[in-house]
Length: 457
Image 1 (spheres, one colour):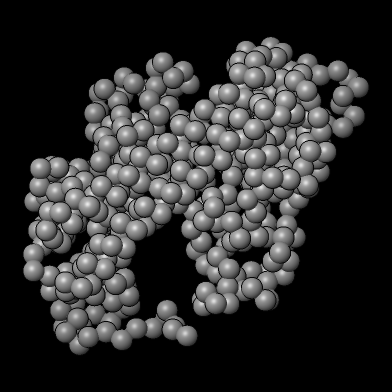
Image 2: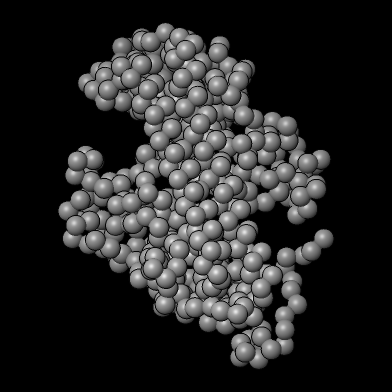
């Protein structure tokens, strides 16, 4: 089994690096990637195949609440998210004053601070959104290079190490345009580059379709229960008798009261009575392994919201306590159980087919349904605006609010007629299938390019 903490380096690299003996310059993989690309018949500088490499510049942000006056704004952690419905709004006036905030489809986005080098391809539904100055924009010259092909290279195992490497391959803490302007981009026959680029664009189209299916499922459910933002009481004035169970103010806030009332008014049933069970996996030590033959990918409670959820490590199949309870099912609705209100706590998500059978954090409450269709329907219930408010209204604790599976199980939810449930569930299922297909198409395109580089070098 390989040890990731040591590495054999070439003596020429030591000479080239000024005989530096610290590890960072040699552990990133940038030097190997550079040497491989140098053996290719043709490369071009990144600056020669782009219109511009830039970021928005630092300035104070003016937030608004009304979508009529604001533009959806992505932070550096949002560019890889699958759902943009909860993004904050930055003032349209500020965006007009600084158009560098605005994204266009076909660009490659690169996080330039914090966790450096995370990338995303701006798909059509991201066009005209605003984005943080902590994200670098690589705007390709479409006349010289297919935009999808450039993204495939930059996000490949050859591109990423070069992007995050500084002088002599050292890891830098902040990427500026000049740090990557000279990066070598491999060039191949136009037909091959076009094929890779079209696969990336097809992946983007599937992800747009996934967003459309999600929005359609939520809109249909909310129409069925006749929800509007003005549904429910205007102020939280609970009856004295109701205070026997809860005395925290948020539980009785207008949005929470409105959400609960709206869900209960339409064929309301107890959630726990319509599912197999609602539970939180038992906590235990995470015994990490490096060999896939002995491990299961482990997903955090935040990674399940990403466009392409991936595990940071593997946990042992045989030695991890309560592993069976951690494994994700296609009948699950997942709900982060802790965090700050307004964050991921209480935001329901469905696991993708590619993640079914993998392990998920014990910080994810599982609503395990009787079928994938039921899971799709109940996801729409819990992810809807009234469902979200009703769900986080059960949270307790002032420092780090938490959900309890028994309180989630006791929620009253609409159990609409079967045809309505199937229609809503079907749209939710189509969303996860499309998102999964987009991930597969992107992975195949990047793999095809990596294999081409390997063969030609």
